[in-house]
Amino acid sequence: MNEDPDSPDTPYVVPLDEGTTVAQVGGKGASLARLAAARLPIPPGFHVTTAAYHAFVAQDARQGQILAAVAGFRADDPVACEEAADKIARLFVEGVVPEPISEAVREAYAGLGSGSVPVAVRSSATAEDLPEMSFAGQQDTYLNIHGEREVLAAVRRCWASLWTARAIGYRLRNGIPAEDVALAVVVQELVPADAAGVLFTADPMTGATDQVLVNATWGLGEALVGGQVTPDTILVDRATGAVTERRLGDKAVMTVRTSDGTREVPVPAERRSAPVLTDAQAGELARLGVRVEGLYDRPMDIEWARHDGTVFIVQARPITALRTSEPATEEWNDTRHGDYLWTSANLGEAIPDVMTPATWSLIEIFMAETMALAEVGGHRLSGNIAGRFYLNLSVSAAAAGAFGLTRLFLSSVPQVFGRIPDTVTIPPLPMSRWELIRATIPPAVAFRWRLLPYQRNLDSPGGRGTRPLRPGHRAGGRRDDPERAGRPVARRARALPPRRQPAARGGRPLRQQRPGPDPGQGARTRLRGGHERAAHRPAGR
Image 1 (tube, one colour):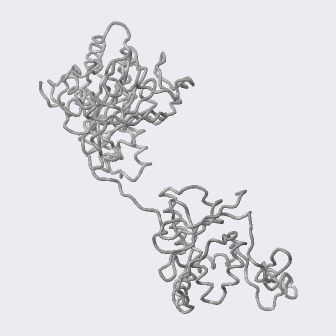
Image 2: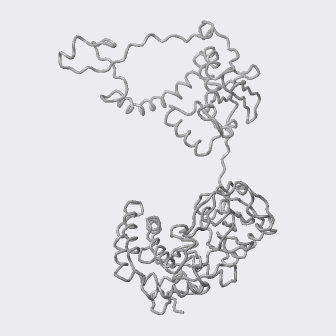
Image 3: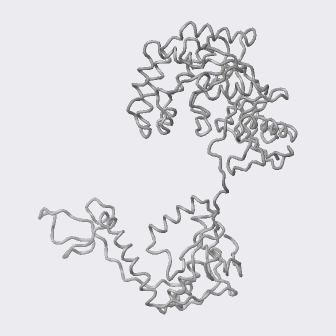
């Protein structure tokens, strides 16, 4: 068989097991042909080759119009890609499939069986399913197609999907010339699946090859591939076929056949949390996956479907970007940096749960942008302990002591953080007044300069802040009669009374009040070298 897709000797349609090259039947088609030739369980079908695509776009100069539509566009210009995709789609929708192609497709479809056989019509691009790239999901698939007329319409829609905005952008980013791509179509009998899923012959997250990972859900596989359902996840030992781990998903919806296609329907309540596969069935799938991997000599991503207990392979492609090293880890335990008293009081409402790495990154950025300094004398002001955000009371106490304010600090702690248990002491930190001044003044000055643009914005006309008083103006009043003089009246702040020391309970000054129990405050933990020495969590929080 001549393998040049543009050769007049290249057929428009070939049997499923005869599609030997990517140039002729695309990446997906070539993979299925390889599986079919190995007598693996593949639904019967045929290929509409790239020769048919080339013949269609050569008609009425469509190829030139397609290349003109995408010429000059950049991958980072999604609007331009959308405009190009819409323009190209019209060329396929309004075009007529040449009769030699239509006749070949009708004949091959009739060979699948008498009557209106339901089929799956899948795109297969020449740049698809390559080991170093991932084109999965960029071209269209149509399920439960009935009749010659609908099959031809689905073939034309598949051709058009070669030029979606997403596909155009991906090829541009990866340096694939527009004139080098073409699209074949795979037509297969539709498996009326009662269950379907995906299996990976290596763990795509860790790269581990000693286990096979199986995802399974009810009905056809489109709900799973489209991310509309949480499937069961099963880990199977490659060597023994035994299930080593099983996590049941909440399979809320499933894809089912209808008279004119497919649709998603709710899964009956009794099946939502029921396992889709038995241990024996999962082991059988894993062994099938290992056979497929042996044909390609590399880890594979395999879509499967089950009907009446028989498993079929629907697609198989190499796993792209497989991790080859262990994922990076980070220890969250700032107690290892010294002997401090940490507290999470007054933080629980703002950050109530264990932080994710993304949340912790955002908090670090926020603290860097809003705090003048993150540490004093090598001592951190805040920390991450087991994923929770803490403040370092030891540093605050040492800073207060350097300026002779220890009593004031201790008397204010219950009001701000809650009572420190009697069995817990604040570890002393050596910190002098001059050391503190040298450590804080430079970053404080730099921080003040960073705030100046915001202050100017607040003080400017039209800003949201309060403008300062002008000489000669009374707080809350005006000098003489500015309206009569034609001068605008500015908003002015009322003079604030002198700051008073806050009164504590019982009317005594705060500095005279002895620390006492305060059940309305949060928790703190005394940690030395990563170990909890004492903890206090009052009731009611």
